[in-house]
Image (cartoon, rainbow, N blue to C red; front, side, top):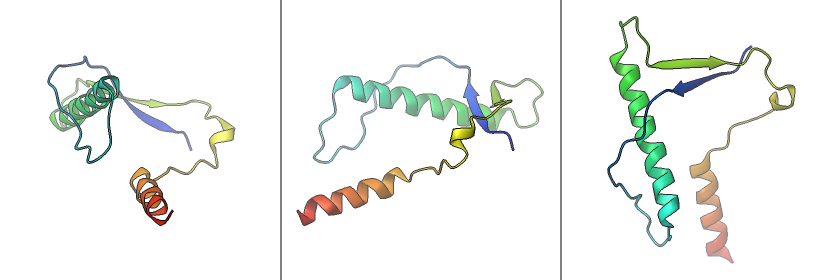
Length: 93
């Protein structure tokens, strides 16, 4: 079956928003990247909700015609779970 991805054709918008960091230190570049991704995704979700029933689409679905065969066995990683396990391993050491 073809692989599909949602592609957003929007623009960056301003507005600072720092992640809750606990004891981690983030560089300004990291915070800017996280803010951009967060805001872009919020725009995608808003556009998806607003285009329900609308013919004109702001969000397009990208479907690869020939998916990469080496990615057939790819399994997504739960980053939250991975972070929890790494945190627990660090506490044990």
